[in-house]
Length: 102
Length: 152
Image (cartoon, rainbow over all chains, first blue to last red; front, side):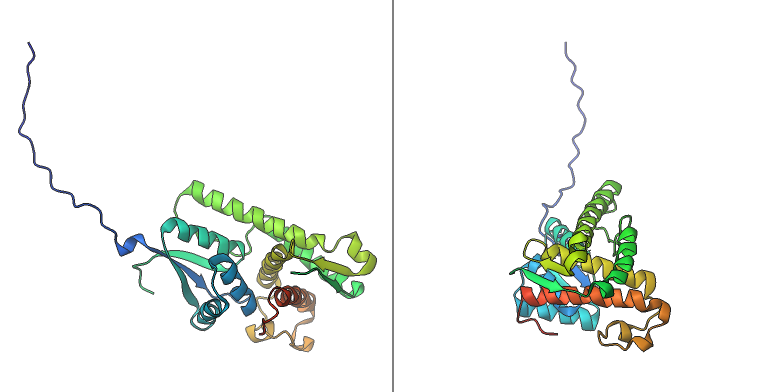
């Protein structure tokens, strides 16, 4: 004979389905450095991120004048790949969650 | 990029190579710029660092290769589409290292002025400074040939 023990079934708290959040986006930030010439930075941004000359120059000037520029926003995996490539070219680049201030 | 041959004065460049080799030795065990890591995972960080180190060392070797026995025969270095990116990165790594090791005390306005009078540089730093400027000029030539519209 099989005995089935029953227990009151708890109603699980409904878990909301994950929805895309801004926090899932990551940004690639290039920081100023005292060594690399401006034309070098422009060339690297074009090569790594596929920017047109004008856009690359705008970001380079922002880095030069403000000390930093957000050059790309997207998935974490792709952001990591971009940061790695920028570091290979000896630019100072970091990855940040897109919701962070600054 | 078409092949570019640059003729250099061997006796002027030879002393700079000593500084380049010292900086290259430093870079065998350290990154020119300390990397920041997106994850606090030791394995990930180690892999990231090792891959950057391998790429950096390969680029620096490419640059050192320009100044082998052929260079001392005719004073010429040859740059083309096969080596230009590696040379750009190698120059960047070496310049960053030279700045960190020798030129920290030199004011930024002198460092950034490619026409800075030598008299403003302390005697013992003139060779590293000349090397820093020399590598900058190699980068400048490559960048101008990659994009003739470049003007700074």
